[in-house]
Length: 218
Image (tube, rainbow, N blue to C red; front, side, top):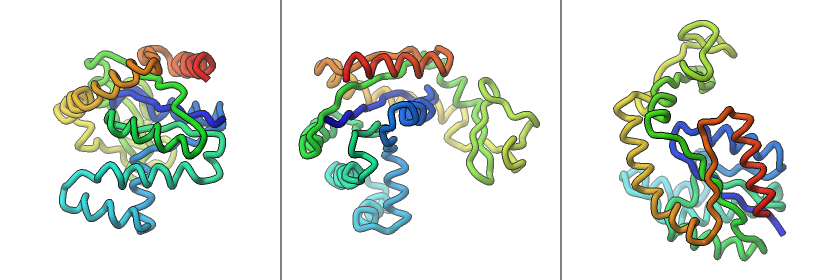
């Protein structure tokens, strides 16, 4: 039976890093809903074109379009043994739809690790984040500073701070995340699938705790 993991965590908690590490250790495909949207829009797939019609008007993409993208992605050969879902579902309605969809792949959501950290720590991490202009490599004043200030270690291009990494924007992003995700966290807690992981620990320890959570719920 395939293994499906829904990874939850606020901006700045290191969810993307941990999703990649889990993917390497388990062999499960890492599916980021944001990357999936960008891929479909860039390749001008039918679903990408449909999503773009909503996004260009500033509207939310309907659940059925998002779910169709996820289903199409899960049907690819690299997801035969399961997947790590990052950024989806976002609501209890999407979570219910996901469970119904996974039945067609003879699976279910096995575990939902929620990486947690205090809001002040998240703001500090995010507002110290700098991105390289050339390739999008990310550095952090606090946890991963560049060797030369304002220059990318990997390609030497200029580092800049994105608007959504500035302190006031970061604070709002975290508030929105908390508001939107609370019902989803309750949904998975009520279904006995939520496991809290301390995101303040060293990266390796967070990964180890995540792997332990998978073993106990597989």
